[in-house]
Image 1: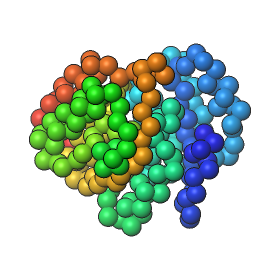
Image 2: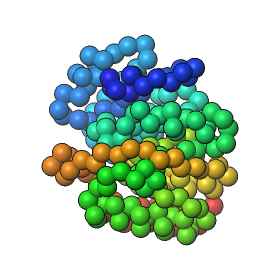
Image 3: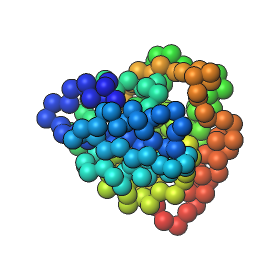
Image 4: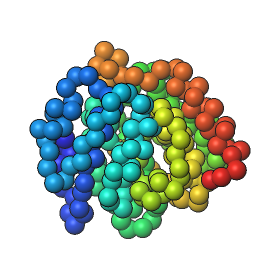
Length: 211
């Protein structure tokens, strides 16, 4: 949280929404210790999944734009200005931070190529040219996130929000970002079954009636 607060966003007001997704490691106490007028803390009674936690965070937010930030800091908050720049000059309705364009360290081979495969399938199904669909760093308008009426509870949030945005006519652009991958021992949670859910989510949304 300290690194998020330290990022200079000239002329931009910020609000930090922290969702503790049923953790048992004392996270809620840490959130309480960081309380301030710029921070909204939400503690869920049990783990609900990334997508479910994000939906709750979107509802609690007050700002016009949302940036998704995981707590493990694999992604550097110092890249916020890179994400905001295309949005603020109105050249994009959504901005994704691409680890591929960033050219930095890569995660495990299975994670790297799994992400590239999901991105390729998405591009094929939805006519896009993205390089990093599964990136955490996604910036979009709060009103678009709420209008999408998101349903997915898990990591397939990435595929759902992107499909909803694209089908609603929103333009997604990518900017290069830094990335410091963590190990399985450090708590990386994505598994092969999440990839199957992502593929099913893309196929389902490709033929869904509503955007």
